[in-house]
Image 1 (tube, each protein chain N blue to C red):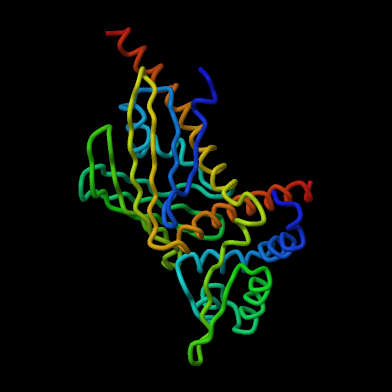
Image 2 (cartoon, rainbow over the protein chains, first blue to last red):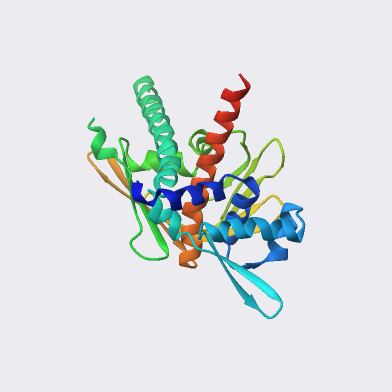
Length: 119
Length: 163
């Protein structure tokens, strides 16, 4: 954890503290989207989506460019990476699964041993 | 058993890849069976809090399908994962495509996942290489892992606040 990045980190956590904004991040991980594409699956009005995107922009998690009449948004995940050990949760999700896999494998080994003993 | 030898290693050797390595105290034949047999997969592919696995199919032949679906209190399915096996060397190496989508059908991301297994003295070393289409997609996958974790934290917090 980089402590002197805490004002920035506050913005990042604030941005992530709303389910709609987390849903927007999830959508943007699939690539660039315009504002109406972001608003539609959230059953959100255009101004509401714009407001959430602005919060994400302030946290520098999203970058917006204007192409004609379209506002296109891109994910910019670097602040997460810079401000904290952002891979930590991804790692933990896998580690929890691998620990479950460890116990399953112990069970499978025990089953095989008892089966070969019975033979 | 020395727990440090089993520690998972996570790395991002290129802009579009994630590599995960882990050791298991079992022969690779069993690790393979645990990882690619539906009734076994349900035991370790733990869903996020409040979610359950509703579909789990895995046909480990070239051209065979991988299909998973999760449901939540709000949505069924809440998330789907569909892929096809493209390379299979039994107990050694397996490659599949993978597309995650929201319940609405909106695609969240696609990747190619390769698993490699080697065995020494009854211990299996596994290496997973995930390859994404772009750096954004790779970073997004890591960020959504974080999102899931935070969702879990918020739920726990809710439970504490209610009690």
